Structure formats: structure tokens, C-alpha cells
Image 1 (cartoon, rainbow, N blue to C red):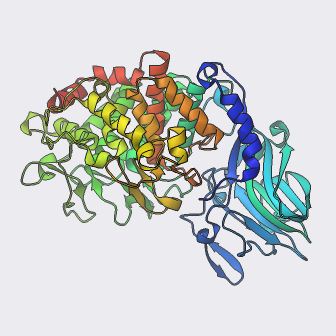
Image 2: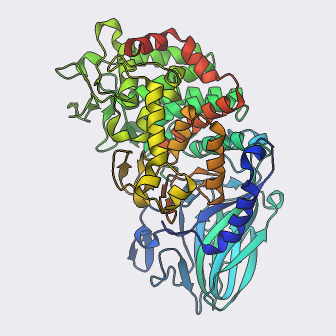
Image 3: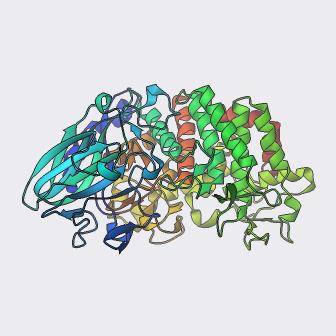
Length: 599
């Protein structure tokens, strides 16, 4: 990822000025207009996999916009110009035209236009819907550059003058980037599938970035943080399958995330509790998701981590496992969601699945629970011995499955693995006891005190290890786990690891439940918004400690952490009853499981 265009600094400066005194202003509902990047053409050379017979072939894994959609190239012009830096796209059109299309909603081939009057997924209520009121492009070169919203770019429609809406700009002919803004009327355009830019014949164009101007609903900032987090998560949900995509830009039937599916049902109930979705919608999503989970293959009662559809049937994707932690996250979420909605049938189904796990055949010789099984039934080599939140969730699942016949076993060190952020925070997404002085039997460690200690270490990390960095200056923190640099690979890091430079902002929200000053969390998020790291499409996946790079990929697992954490933070900030925590505390099944693992 490359540094954001310097020509956005004027807009950023205005946002920064507006954020002064942020804590006091955050309680005032406002209908702000903010900038949402569509694309900044990060690592374009890596996205272009090959050229075949003059056609550009893109790497589908990396072919994503900041909106969680895909993009491609238009016209016979020379696009992209390989001599440009990776931060831009260059089109030379001496006798032709060329440009770049960007799907506004999901993959272009899914043909799901975006309603510019209500840009969030349709399950979100009208009162919480933002709308698009303008577009901005940063470019340099000479000739005519056109912006357009379109509903179709196939066949004869793939012409620069066949647009739902368009506006042309004249470039000055020098190398200095210019910022061009266009106002639009969402009521007039209504819906569009694409936002494109086109270099007209004879133009030489270098584009740094394309953005949308988004008018936000009239909500206070703490509510907005939850709204963006939930909307980000909702972009991964598939109404057709009832499952959640692992990434927003992947096809619904090729890479579904099972634990995120359960957590999305729970996050939707959280949204229902504050009116972001209706009761009817929450029940529909819960039932669809629960039914989809019931239809998945199981091995010794365990669910797969990732699944795909083959000949109409779901199967684990290659190299995916049947996982104990993912089964626990999915089924515990489904039962909590069902209990909150008083859906006794779905709650009973989730409990039956939990009790159907053959936990006695999922432990090693010393009695520790396995991480899971391979696709062909062989035990995975790793075990849940570590002290921490993942192990705690698995042991609570074990208690539900085996009752009193099995004694939970966990390492007594009282130290989470490498200080990786999300590990200590995970159980608090579901159970309020972890925000108290509850102690694990193993090691008798005060869970709350330990989390606060790790949070202090997180906040001090960059001041200690990178004192001149932007992260140290801003007070950023978040050594955790998620997508690696450029969205390739998986990175896990913690406060015990030296020389870390990748920040996962989901930890800022997860750890907020033990932060002594919740308003400081919103202050930090406000500062992050001015830099484009919190947008109407949610938090970015990761940020470089120097502030020059970030990853806008929308992944469902970290989105689940953000959505649930932001709900709990909102309830804490408002001093209101937490409906999810109340359900967890009232359920005798979960109370027994907690007592079996904790004092």
C-alpha cells in the first residue's frame, strides 16, 4: 500500500480542524460529509497477473477496491502504463480511449447495483443509511478526463459516452496532480453498478486516486463507529447462501467463513437492539445462517473453518480444517443470538450441535483439546494448551459437550501467547464475566488485571520500539493478527515480539472494554478518521506504524471483532444495559460452562 495522495491534505486538514474538541462534539448527532476512497491503485503491478493476447488478466485474490468490490480496465487505450509508480494508473490514448471501471457493490459479475441514496447493505434501516453526494478524482496529465456512473459496461455500452451520469474535466498538461470534484444528485441517478474514469482520445492521464463524497446519517460519533463496523461486516454476508464471505471481494460460494457466520448473526442482534436493523430482519438472518450451518459437513461434531460449494453441496476448502475454536465461536454465537431474540428452536439447534461434539475423541493423551482434524480425519498437531481467550472458549465448548465427565485443562502460566492482542479479548465479545476479576482455574490469574496490563504494554509499544513513528506520535496501538502486507498471508504479532510495524486497529475496539477512559478510544478513532483509516466502509485491516501504508481489504473475521466490540463499547459509553451480556448471564448452559473453567 502506498501513501495517500498529498492532494487530499486539504480535505484532511478540514476534518482535522473539525475533530478538535472531538470528545465533547461526538455526542452531537451530525450529518457530516466525508471522503470514501474507491481506489488508490495500491500495488497495481502485483494485481496485474498477466497479459494474454493484449488482454489484462488480474489476480482475483488482490483485485479489490476500498469498497470490497472489484475493478478492471476499459477501452483500447494503453492501460495501465507500466512505467508509472504503483500508486497510480496511467492511460495514454493518442487515437483511442481508455480508463478503469470500479464496481460499486460486490463483484461486477454479480450484477448488484448500489442504491446511491442508501449505500449500506439493505438490512440496515433507512434512518442509518448514508448516501453518495459527490465524487473526487486526483489526476495529472493533459487532455480530457471524464468521471461517470454507469449501470452497464458490457457490449455496446462499453463506450465513454454511454453513462448514467458523467462530467468531464480538462487537465492542465503538467505533472502536478490536480483535485477535481463533482457534485451529484443521488435522487436523480438513483442506482449504479460502476463508477469509472475515462481518458478521452488524445489524452495522457495519470490518476492517483478516486473517491466518493458520502453524506452520513444524523447520528453521534459513538453510534457511527458501531454503524460503520456493522456495515463493513454486513458487506461480507450473502443473502443467497446464509453464510459470510471470508472477504467482501470473494464470490459467495467459493470462500465462506464459518465462525464469522455465527458471529454475524450475533452482531445483527446487537444492531437490532439499537434499531440499526429491524427485529424481522434480525430473525431472518439468524434463521438463514443457522439453517446454512446445519447443512454443512461435520466431523466428530466439528464444523469446518472455510467452505465452498462443489456441485451444489458445501465442502471444506482445500487445506481447511475441522476446527474446535471455529466451531465454538460459531455455535456459541448462534445460541446467544437466538436467546436474545427468544427464538427457542434455533437456540435448541445450536445447543444440540454443541452437545453433539465428540469431545472425548478430540483430546490428546494428556487431556488437552486438539485444534481440530484435517479433511481426512487426522488430528491436527497443535493443541489448546496455551493460557488465553481461544483456549477458554474451547474449554467452555468442551464443558457443554461433555458435561462433568471431563476436567478442563489449560496451561497455568497465566501468559497469553506472545501478547497477541485479540487472544486475551476474545471471550469478552460474548461474556461479561471477563470484564470483572474472574480468574481462570489454571494459574488463578485475574483476567481483567491481565488484560489491562497487556493494554498498557500495547499503548507503550511504539513509543518504546519506534519513538519517531507516526504511531508513537498519535498513540496508535494494535499488535494482533490479520491479513499481512498487501493482503498476502497471515500475520500474528504481539507485544513480546520485537520490531513490529503493522497495527491491527480491531484491537483498539476490542481492548476498549477494559480501557479506563472509553472517550479516549473515540478520540483516537476520530483522529484515525481524518487519515482515512476509519471510513463509511469501516476500519481498514491494518496500518503501517509510519502511517505511509495501510490495507483497505474487508475481511469478515476482524470485522466480527470490530462489530461486537463496538456494540459493547457503545453500551459502556452510554451506561445502558447490554442486551447480549444479559442473555449470556441468564443462560444456565453458559453459566455452567464459565464456572467449569473459571472461579
